[in-house]
Length: 255
Length: 302
Image 1 (cartoon, each protein chain N blue to C red):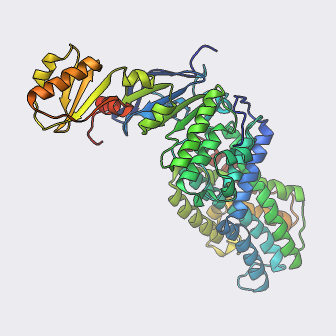
Image 2: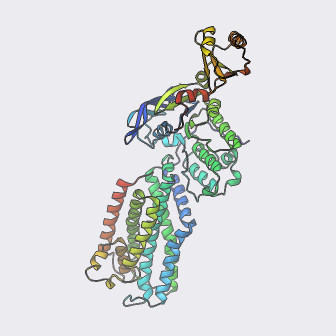
Image 3: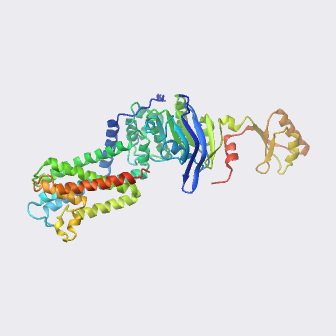
């Protein structure tokens, strides 16, 4: 029999080490999950390649890939920060994982930080693949890299807030259904594949206030048109992030 | 360091209109095993979860290692094994335990702990494919990996096979020897009798009895025998020393309680002879914790 020294020697690990350990576990869980990979990589890449090559929708002037690449990047952010995170967190709550983590030295702040790091890590991976595919399709991005990164981070905050809001209140199965539904609706109505101008004049301004429209519109303005930081999109994303993260922190149930 | 590891005074917990814990008071000492026994719905898990900081009390005082149960500094000092779950289904056995170990500055070696609990060959098995008993053992490992001062084990051996149960008992015994305070709930009387220094029997949210297993089962022993049903026990009782008790339960099975010695034995057998009755299977036994438990909490199913 192995001898273990069970003498009490309790001490929490340093905060960064706890957060990194949890972030690594979260990222591995995302990448290991087949359905999530479908959502985070396969669908965005298929949409990018399919709609770049086939003239199915009217995207206006210029090469199709210049219009599509920013939209698909925004879609990738939404799929990881919102859909994937909502579903995973909903089931973690259901399986008592969040409750169990609450009994470890990792604080709730630490857990949220770890989740955010994992999401950003997976987004980086998605961005590398999508940018590589888009460049292969002769994409010519313009504009400021810093502005694009800022938009992606704000989008991540807004979508994470929305996902956690949903996962913290609804049952896990309801979160699964609702997160997929919202994903589809936002994919259709958020200017990802075709521009908002295809919608009637009365609806278009309302759709422009969706977080996905702000992110696609903002990224497109920077990467396709070389615009400076689009303040309208930034304002919409900041508002969504403040609203959803604020509500989630008040309503989230850990078990 | 003289204060108890866990001190619960007049604890009250309500869920809507039902009172789950109703003025419960108990203490668990450092370096000792305290077992909380009680029928389903007695308030065991509510009490433990309040001590773990998962639920809030509606009344009373709870101190854990001298602190409020919600105190975040306790998270490193207290190990917790919930009744079920807590591990992501897709996560591998060793992967989860390693993750738990990284939350602590001086953890046990995860591989050695897995070996100790017989989980080495399942190290790469995802949690959802482990058997119930393997999941239980992993959960126990998670409670002790950070070398805590106090562990809460909620039904640690429920559903374990005899070998795994024994491995769990040995770990609890070693924890106690190392100075760790162990608080566990259980339905198994033999487990409490064997492991616990202190047993607390609770029912309907209150403590109905507590003490060491020996105190609870009493110095008193029982004389049991079988004979034809319907003997006139009142007559026998008048011949026995004051303070003795006699009952027939079930029909044809007689139990005499009191100061069971040679004198009492002689009186009972003489009385049987005078009645023309042969006493079969006559035996002198110590009361078990199960006898005490059923006496206190009743025999009806809940």
